[in-house]
Length: 403
DNA sequence: CGAGATTCATGTGAAGTATACCTTTAGGCTTAA
DNA sequence: AAGCCTAAAGGTATACTTCACATGAATCTCGTA
Image (tube, rainbow, N blue to C red; front, side):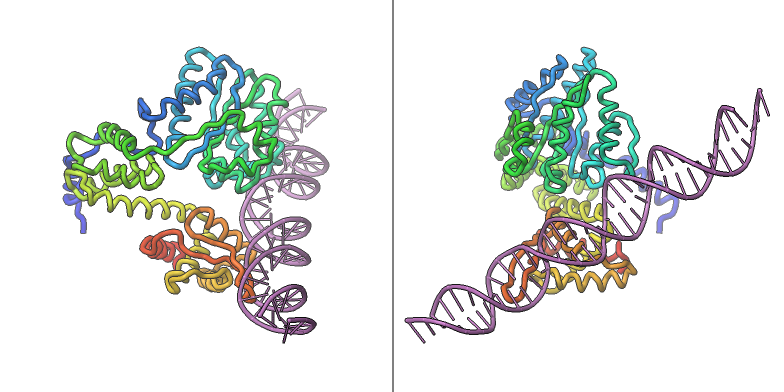
């Protein structure tokens, strides 16, 4: 029961509360700090490669590899920012579009990627209905209407190619021969080190005119990075002894993932704030660790279409009951059952098979095709997430699907 | 006993279908001269 | 006659279905030692 006075008190208390954050943004993953440590070389190289753009000369296409949280995106964005600032000052017609190919329904097909690029130019493209080459033409029109240089940055490009093949990259690189006034350069960013091995050799050679590999940070480097960001983000002495070290250690264990370390610190801080405490302790880090993983998966699950949720729910229910790996056929039966209960028309087993494969790609489950000899061939499906998380998500799905 | 055939449950590729949306076009209606 | 609106026709992307064939090791079969 909250009366008006109670609520007012709450808000006043909220305002008076001693916030431990000074600038929370400094710990968010899209924050670009003023100085980036341990990546001076990489930045210099990227800058070198892209610099010709300032003279309106087409830079070489660039391909960047490195595991998550090694600063690829950060460095590229940093260089982009500087390039754009300078090009504005010098009146150079340079445009740079950054696209993350992982985003569902934004850049995960050829059509949608092209549409998105056209929209960046201010054009309007319907979600469906146009022929793809029509969208190409529209894009070219915008691009070629005056002399300009375009750099397209495709982040998580491996995901895109995994899903729809490498033809789109071929088309993009070939576009230059159709352009009269303008030119395009591509910058591909991939988490997958062996990604390029499976590319068509023509695409591969034109895309990786230049290559750059980002190696992981070690624990000491992570510490320095964290300390500096923490100083921007938090007020005074709110972080207890050993907290930074612990964050770094956690992240170093995960192949030096700086994004993760920063997130740990941020979430820990938020937990402290919500609990009305004054300092970030070691225990907060543990709690944050669990929360981050949960939230990440909850986000993924929530962004899936209903049929994916139903499938996932069937998998979770069954796995939690059996507590061992399960097979496609069993899931399909359960799934059909739930469809019946929610009044949805069940998809075919063929489609479910694809959905299971996609869920595997998303990292929520592990699905491996095995042959059980005389007893046929199937996918062996296990959870890729801790049981406690699965239970929580399962309850969430249950409510969401009103089961 | 062991090589080769058989079998099962479902993976997987290709082609077809439903849906939702797009542009073009042709006809009909209104309007202004 | 010109201008505008509307509805039909013809087209596309995407998510899904249908059909048909591929897979691969446990199990079976049968000739041989």
